[in-house]
Image 1 (cartoon, each protein chain N blue to C red):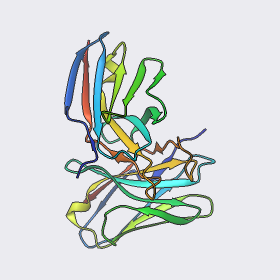
Image 2: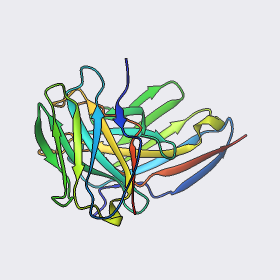
Image 3: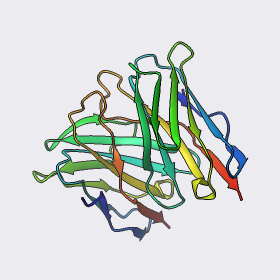
Length: 115
Length: 114
Protein backbone atom coordinates (compact mmCIF):
# COMPACT_ATOMS: atom_id res chain seq x y z
CA UNK A 1 0.00 0.00 0.00
CA UNK A 2 1.44 3.39 -0.97
CA UNK A 3 2.24 5.80 1.82
CA UNK A 4 1.35 9.44 2.24
CA UNK A 5 2.64 11.54 -0.64
CA UNK A 6 3.33 15.25 -0.59
CA UNK A 7 4.10 17.59 -3.44
CA UNK A 8 6.22 19.45 -4.07
CA UNK A 9 9.08 18.24 -1.90
CA UNK A 10 10.95 21.54 -2.02
CA UNK A 11 9.75 25.06 -2.64
CA UNK A 12 11.42 28.47 -2.64
CA UNK A 13 9.26 31.57 -2.47
CA UNK A 14 9.73 35.24 -1.67
CA UNK A 15 8.04 37.28 1.01
CA UNK A 16 4.50 38.31 0.15
CA UNK A 17 3.87 35.45 -2.23
CA UNK A 18 1.44 32.64 -1.58
CA UNK A 19 1.98 28.91 -1.76
CA UNK A 20 -0.14 25.77 -2.07
CA UNK A 21 1.03 22.40 -0.82
CA UNK A 22 -0.63 19.11 -1.68
CA UNK A 23 -1.09 15.87 0.24
CA UNK A 24 -2.47 12.50 -0.85
CA UNK A 25 -3.33 10.23 2.08
CA UNK A 26 -2.91 6.49 2.33
CA UNK A 27 -5.65 4.71 0.41
CA UNK A 28 -8.67 4.26 2.65
CA UNK A 29 -7.63 6.97 5.08
CA UNK A 30 -10.13 9.76 5.37
CA UNK A 31 -8.54 12.08 7.89
CA UNK A 32 -5.66 14.40 7.01
CA UNK A 33 -3.74 16.55 9.47
CA UNK A 34 -1.07 19.15 8.77
CA UNK A 35 1.91 20.06 10.92
CA UNK A 36 4.69 22.62 10.77
CA UNK A 37 8.18 21.75 11.93
CA UNK A 38 10.72 24.44 12.73
CA UNK A 39 13.94 24.20 14.74
CA UNK A 40 12.65 26.56 17.40
CA UNK A 41 9.05 25.40 17.80
CA UNK A 42 9.28 21.72 16.98
CA UNK A 43 6.29 19.96 15.46
CA UNK A 44 3.13 22.03 15.71
CA UNK A 45 -0.39 21.13 14.65
CA UNK A 46 -1.95 23.28 11.94
CA UNK A 47 -5.34 21.71 11.19
CA UNK A 48 -7.21 18.47 10.58
CA UNK A 49 -9.71 17.60 7.89
CA UNK A 50 -12.22 14.81 7.64
CA UNK A 51 -14.96 14.44 5.01
CA UNK A 52 -14.02 17.78 3.49
CA UNK A 53 -14.60 19.54 6.81
CA UNK A 54 -12.07 21.15 9.08
CA UNK A 55 -12.50 19.44 12.44
CA UNK A 56 -9.72 21.04 14.39
CA UNK A 57 -7.37 23.98 14.08
CA UNK A 58 -4.12 24.92 15.76
CA UNK A 59 -2.88 28.34 16.82
CA UNK A 60 -1.80 29.75 13.48
CA UNK A 61 -2.86 32.99 11.81
CA UNK A 62 -5.57 33.09 9.19
CA UNK A 63 -2.92 33.22 6.46
CA UNK A 64 -2.76 29.46 6.88
CA UNK A 65 -5.72 27.67 5.39
CA UNK A 66 -6.55 24.29 3.97
CA UNK A 67 -9.16 22.18 2.33
CA UNK A 68 -9.96 18.57 1.63
CA UNK A 69 -11.47 17.09 -1.49
CA UNK A 70 -14.00 14.29 -1.86
CA UNK A 71 -11.18 11.81 -2.58
CA UNK A 72 -9.59 12.77 0.78
CA UNK A 73 -6.67 14.57 -0.87
CA UNK A 74 -5.84 17.78 0.93
CA UNK A 75 -4.18 21.07 0.18
CA UNK A 76 -2.89 23.76 2.46
CA UNK A 77 -2.34 27.35 1.45
CA UNK A 78 -0.20 30.04 3.01
CA UNK A 79 -0.82 33.57 1.80
CA UNK A 80 1.38 36.64 2.20
CA UNK A 81 4.43 34.58 3.07
CA UNK A 82 6.76 35.74 5.84
CA UNK A 83 10.35 34.74 6.51
CA UNK A 84 9.17 32.88 9.60
CA UNK A 85 7.04 30.57 7.48
CA UNK A 86 10.18 28.77 6.34
CA UNK A 87 9.69 25.26 7.67
CA UNK A 88 9.08 21.63 6.90
CA UNK A 89 5.36 21.12 6.36
CA UNK A 90 4.16 17.64 7.15
CA UNK A 91 0.94 15.93 6.26
CA UNK A 92 -0.36 12.92 8.15
CA UNK A 93 -3.24 10.62 7.35
CA UNK A 94 -5.32 8.32 9.49
CA UNK A 95 -8.51 6.32 9.27
CA UNK A 96 -10.57 8.82 11.29
CA UNK A 97 -12.88 10.03 12.72
CA UNK A 98 -10.78 8.64 15.25
CA UNK A 99 -11.17 5.41 17.04
CA UNK A 100 -9.40 5.34 20.34
CA UNK A 101 -6.21 4.13 18.73
CA UNK A 102 -6.20 6.04 15.45
CA UNK A 103 -2.59 6.29 14.33
CA UNK A 104 -1.34 9.07 12.10
CA UNK A 105 1.13 8.22 9.34
CA UNK A 106 3.29 10.99 7.96
CA UNK A 107 4.42 11.92 4.50
CA UNK A 108 7.97 13.02 3.65
CA UNK A 109 7.11 16.69 4.00
CA UNK A 110 7.48 19.81 1.87
CA UNK A 111 10.47 21.99 2.66
CA UNK A 112 9.40 25.63 2.17
CA UNK A 113 12.03 28.35 2.09
CA UNK A 114 10.90 31.97 2.11
CA UNK A 115 13.50 34.51 0.95
CA UNK B 1 2.69 25.64 28.06
CA UNK B 2 4.33 22.48 26.87
CA UNK B 3 1.99 19.57 27.52
CA UNK B 4 4.43 16.90 26.33
CA UNK B 5 8.06 17.12 27.39
CA UNK B 6 11.16 15.19 26.49
CA UNK B 7 13.70 16.53 28.94
CA UNK B 8 16.76 14.86 27.44
CA UNK B 9 17.74 16.52 24.15
CA UNK B 10 20.23 13.77 23.39
CA UNK B 11 21.25 10.26 24.37
CA UNK B 12 24.29 8.21 23.41
CA UNK B 13 24.49 4.43 23.90
CA UNK B 14 26.72 1.62 22.77
CA UNK B 15 25.54 -0.83 20.15
CA UNK B 16 23.85 -3.84 21.74
CA UNK B 17 22.93 -2.02 24.94
CA UNK B 18 19.51 -0.74 25.95
CA UNK B 19 18.31 2.74 24.94
CA UNK B 20 15.71 4.34 27.20
CA UNK B 21 13.94 7.46 26.00
CA UNK B 22 11.64 9.29 28.37
CA UNK B 23 8.60 11.49 27.97
CA UNK B 24 6.40 13.33 30.48
CA UNK B 25 2.98 14.84 29.96
CA UNK B 26 0.78 17.16 31.94
CA UNK B 27 -2.74 16.69 30.53
CA UNK B 28 -4.50 13.77 32.17
CA UNK B 29 -7.05 13.74 29.34
CA UNK B 30 -4.53 12.27 26.90
CA UNK B 31 -5.56 8.71 26.15
CA UNK B 32 -3.26 7.63 23.33
CA UNK B 33 0.49 7.93 23.08
CA UNK B 34 2.82 7.34 20.15
CA UNK B 35 6.52 7.25 19.41
CA UNK B 36 7.93 8.38 16.10
CA UNK B 37 11.44 8.19 14.67
CA UNK B 38 12.62 10.97 12.41
CA UNK B 39 15.58 11.62 10.15
CA UNK B 40 16.42 15.17 9.00
CA UNK B 41 14.27 16.49 6.15
CA UNK B 42 11.98 13.45 6.31
CA UNK B 43 8.58 12.84 7.83
CA UNK B 44 8.28 11.04 11.17
CA UNK B 45 7.99 7.26 10.96
CA UNK B 46 5.54 5.62 13.33
CA UNK B 47 7.22 3.17 15.71
CA UNK B 48 4.85 2.07 18.43
CA UNK B 49 1.86 3.29 20.37
CA UNK B 50 0.02 2.64 23.61
CA UNK B 51 -3.46 3.46 24.81
CA UNK B 52 -4.14 4.64 28.32
CA UNK B 53 -5.86 1.37 29.22
CA UNK B 54 -2.52 -0.44 28.99
CA UNK B 55 0.78 -0.01 30.78
CA UNK B 56 3.02 -1.82 28.31
CA UNK B 57 3.15 -2.52 24.60
CA UNK B 58 5.87 -4.46 22.83
CA UNK B 59 6.85 -4.73 19.17
CA UNK B 60 10.08 -6.51 18.42
CA UNK B 61 12.98 -4.56 19.87
CA UNK B 62 10.71 -1.69 20.91
CA UNK B 63 8.71 -1.57 24.15
CA UNK B 64 6.71 1.37 25.43
CA UNK B 65 5.81 1.68 29.10
CA UNK B 66 3.10 3.98 30.42
CA UNK B 67 2.83 5.13 34.03
CA UNK B 68 -0.42 7.08 34.20
CA UNK B 69 -0.10 8.08 37.84
CA UNK B 70 3.27 9.67 37.11
CA UNK B 71 2.15 10.92 33.68
CA UNK B 72 5.28 9.36 32.24
CA UNK B 73 6.07 7.09 29.34
CA UNK B 74 9.27 5.58 28.11
CA UNK B 75 10.53 3.82 25.01
CA UNK B 76 12.99 0.97 25.43
CA UNK B 77 15.05 -0.23 22.49
CA UNK B 78 16.82 -3.53 23.06
CA UNK B 79 19.33 -4.21 21.64
CA UNK B 80 20.24 -0.84 20.19
CA UNK B 81 21.65 -0.78 16.67
CA UNK B 82 23.53 1.97 14.79
CA UNK B 83 20.55 2.26 12.40
CA UNK B 84 18.45 3.38 15.36
CA UNK B 85 20.35 6.67 15.44
CA UNK B 86 17.74 9.36 14.77
CA UNK B 87 15.51 11.86 16.55
CA UNK B 88 12.72 10.26 18.55
CA UNK B 89 9.49 12.10 19.26
CA UNK B 90 6.78 11.12 21.67
CA UNK B 91 3.28 12.39 20.92
CA UNK B 92 -0.05 12.37 22.72
CA UNK B 93 -3.64 12.71 21.64
CA UNK B 94 -7.18 12.18 22.78
CA UNK B 95 -8.29 15.35 24.49
CA UNK B 96 -12.05 15.67 23.82
CA UNK B 97 -12.70 18.45 21.34
CA UNK B 98 -9.18 18.19 20.00
CA UNK B 99 -9.32 14.86 18.27
CA UNK B 100 -6.92 14.33 15.41
CA UNK B 101 -4.40 16.64 17.01
CA UNK B 102 -1.09 15.19 18.09
CA UNK B 103 0.91 17.09 20.68
CA UNK B 104 4.61 16.41 20.23
CA UNK B 105 7.53 16.58 22.59
CA UNK B 106 10.66 18.41 21.49
CA UNK B 107 12.47 15.22 20.56
CA UNK B 108 15.50 13.28 21.77
CA UNK B 109 18.43 12.65 19.47
CA UNK B 110 19.66 9.10 19.91
CA UNK B 111 23.17 8.14 18.84
CA UNK B 112 24.06 4.47 18.86
CA UNK B 113 27.80 3.94 18.66
CA UNK B 114 29.21 0.85 16.94
